[in-house]
Amino acid sequence: MDKLQELTQKLYQEGLSKGKEEGQAIVEAAKKEAEAIVKKAKEDAQAILDKAAKDADSHRIKVEGDVKMASLEALQTTRAAIENLVVATAVEKPVKDAMSEEKFIKEIISAVATKFSSQESADLALVLPENLKAGLEPFVKGELAKLVGKGVDATFSRKIGAGFKIGPKDGSYFISLTDDAFIALIGEYLRPATKQLLFG
Image (tube, rainbow, N blue to C red):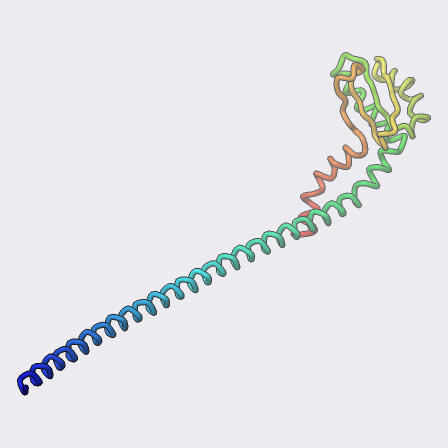
C-alpha cells in the first residue's frame, strides 16, 4: 500500500511539475505574444502619427504656396489696375480732345492721305466721326480731293467717336487712326515708363 501511495504521490508530483512547466511555457508564450502585439501596435501608432505629421506638413506647404500665389496675383492685378488708371488719365482725355479737333484731324488726314495716295493707285475711302460731318465733308470733297489728285469717298459713322479710318475705295482694308487706336498705341509706349515710375 505504501508503494502504491508512493507511486501515486510520485505521479502526482510529476504531473504537477509537468503541468507547472507547461503552464509556465504557456504564460511565457502569451507574454511574448502580448509584447509582440503591443510592440506592433506602438509601431503602427507611430507610423500613423508620422504619416499624419508628413501629410500635415505637405498640406501646410501647399496652403502656404497657394496663399503666396494668390497674394502675388492680387498684387499684380492691383498694379495693373493702377497702371491702367494712370495711363488712361494721362492719355485718354488729351487724345480724345485732339482727335475731336477739326483742324488737327484735317492735318492728319492730309498727311496720311498724301502718303497713302502715293503708294496706292486706288481711290480713297474715309470713315469719319458723324459729329464732325459739317466741318469735314466740304474739306474732303474740296481740299483733300485736290491734294491727293484722285477720288475720295467719305462716310460718317456714329461708331467713331474721334479720329478716322482710311483705305482703298474697294473696302479691301482700312487703317484705323481713331482715338481708341491712338490711346492703345500711346498707352503701350507709356506702360513701361509708368510701371517703372510707380513700382521701381
